[in-house]
Length: 384
Image 1 (cartoon, one colour):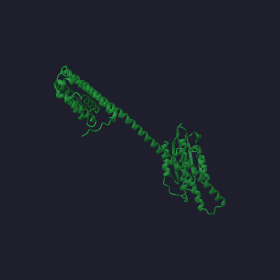
Image 2 (tube, rainbow, N blue to C red):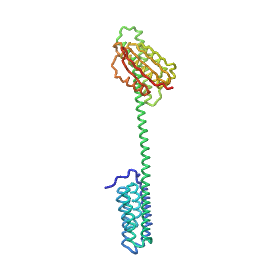
Image 3 (cartoon, rainbow, N blue to C red):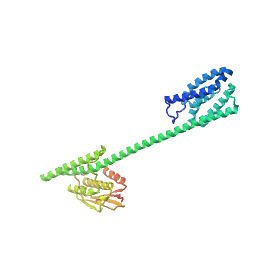
Image 4 (tube, one colour):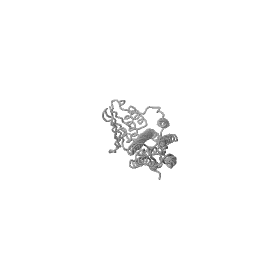
């Protein structure tokens, strides 16, 4: 059964196979040329066996990666009768050593050294050295091939590990980019809710008033219709700006901050709401844009909820704080129990989005019901 493929070995190209086999041919020729005279004179039958096993070894060594241990062990055994198989045997030994299976590698090395000694016995006068020098030489060569193969295997594993780490880093970077995109889409979705809910609630309130109040004079009907038209246009403009972010374009207007809060309150007052603003921040422009935008959206959401669920009830907005501490904002509206055309049961997604927005800014949001009032209270960090 073929051994599992070495996960660290690079694919063997045609050029890679060619130069390896070519080097094995050179090694085999160098070793066989030292024994060919002794074989032809003393052991003619070994001469032909040597050539046959040498040719067979070059066929077997091509499959060294499929069956590395069996190939290396078999070619080591060929050394008993074949000097011409020395090149393929060395190649198979180095290839098997890259797997660093030490017990089986020792077995192959012992068989390789023993085969070299046996060849000197089968073919006499192939070496004038004593048997222990031949043993030492064979052991040194075999150990050098094994160590070289283990070094190559270790280097392959290191390169594979570096490539794997690079791939993992690239995948993690892609995941971080996708996560950032997802967070940006969530932020845009909250922006769309905050912007459109405020505008559409104004449109719904005035349209409902026109539907229920049939006794309004023509001038007031005209003014209300004009207000609905202008509010609808502003809602479309703001929607177009938010969608422009999705198309990777820059918004046409800057995002609102704490400086724009009085304008938001004035807009709500002009639509018929009773809103009181108490801004105790000495310099609203000094508040970081991210914190100021969060306060703006929180107040916008509070006004929208008051307009939808408690039409006609007074609303108070209190903002205060100082640098290096907390910025506190409180939106309180009465619960007068009036029902109107805009009184609907919301899904609560606005408050969920505001809680996420406040928590992302490092703050805390509290939603509670006091006697006769509904309260949104948030604390946001104001760094110096």
